[in-house]
Length: 420
Image (tube, rainbow, N blue to C red; front, side, top):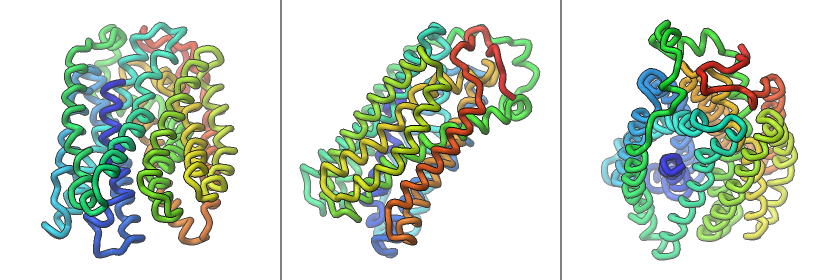
């Protein structure tokens, strides 16, 4: 949980900065609207890199072990984030500034692409089968806690300095300060041991191929696609909440930046609460059933959230944001156990990571950009709600096509059922 919070904190402070200041620092010549759109596009670049990160680090995670791979992803994320914090703006080094920004964002995407699967496997592979959902929820708390922490960090800077100071150098503090969190994460990760399931993996079958991604694409391509589809709505809701609504609240609704950031803390805590509930309940009623419930509720959540947000008050914004992020946790909590249960140990890191990060591309990388275009075209935020509801229906169908994995044994190396 500690490492995942740190990695996603680094990932999210970029999104907050992209929504608030990157249009002025790195794309000042484009104007407010176009600059914000391009800043959010650089945020989405990382989602394209995430599947490649899951393949790259999944390879080493399945071949060399979970622990060493996770140390590497944490270092890559930490150094990339620090570099963004000290990167000069366009006014200083010209076009090189946005070019380096995109490159560093790609490195962040590679790192977080390899992070999630390894972190969840550390807990899921070491947990008792009957309470695997409860154990696997701890890495799942990383995004919610990280978003609340990122919002709190930017809120502190906003309350302690002028807008001019924030634009000039204040936004850099969260990026540079994350070095302290990375040091803590390294201390924790260097102290952990390798998972028992990896140590007991079937070495005879492991040696058949030296590239785990080839095993995944040969044996379980349908599982990867359905797993990604079932999780797509989770990403769509979450990244609309943590990136698009940050910009929407300040630029469109005219709410003060501290108010929007404070409500981000509230939304993150609501997300954490529903994540805990969804994960624990999945041990009782099954992973698949809880993800189905989460996606079904998301259909309604997508339709009601923006009418509430558009009331335009601070409290209505906080309530609407809590709806957007709250529905996410119901399905997000169980997938920390569900996706690993769908793949054998010898390529579990790669398979679970590919499904998770492909969903990130479809739901998190593309949807905020589409949302910006929809509002510009139809002049109503309800178009975003309809988009979210439609994606929830797609995720619901994909989940119905997956088997329930709650009874699978992953400690022996191969799940009891493999959906190909």
